[in-house]
Image (cartoon, rainbow, N blue to C red; front, side, top):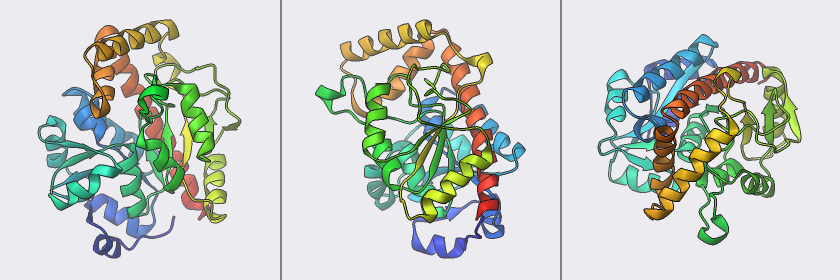
Length: 314
């Protein structure tokens, strides 16, 4: 991996590197970005803290350096401290920030958890090419009338960061999301699978055109894309571990019930995804939360493996 001049990056952007990440960047070690929305808005306490720490450990165990990203007091933090993690885990006064929110957050010196889109932006600023998350946002069900489409998809089309995930969040419209990604020119790869994972379960019924079966194969595709000047990200979809995969009928039933409740309460915008995830957790008696934790740790391991392989390509 190319060495990163962290001081030059910090001068260019409202950004600070954590000590561990700073050393790794300057030495050219593989780094994996991790988002903070999962900490502040995606999971209840204490599972949010435990998961955040577990993700960092999964990345380290796989031979890379974790960089949990958040905005604190108007500055992007590339790697956070234990005290900052404690602060983010409370969720109090923590904005959920995507691309459109970042200028306001910077100017007003606010603190924010970064979505997939905002984490990609920050990772790109810092020179980090791999990012592990649970699932990306996409086209919401009913989008033909609501136009509710996640900014994550636009970010994937233009920002040079590869995202390892367990597919698109199952609460969304998966076929329409795949159509959107194709239109925007985003490669979607299946890690060890020919079928798009459905977040909580391994199968969606949607075939993928491209499959990779090793970290090196994934790294080679990323290297070829960016060296050719083809800007934008790559979506690497990694199925949830078999032991934690949920029955399709069970999870779909919970999602349909949660969507109906959201519609009844007229919940829209940024509030919809946290509401649906919490409602599904309740309806599945916590099984969906357990699955979520398992899949995101698995993604962190795969992202670290690809980051290591990519560092050897460069």
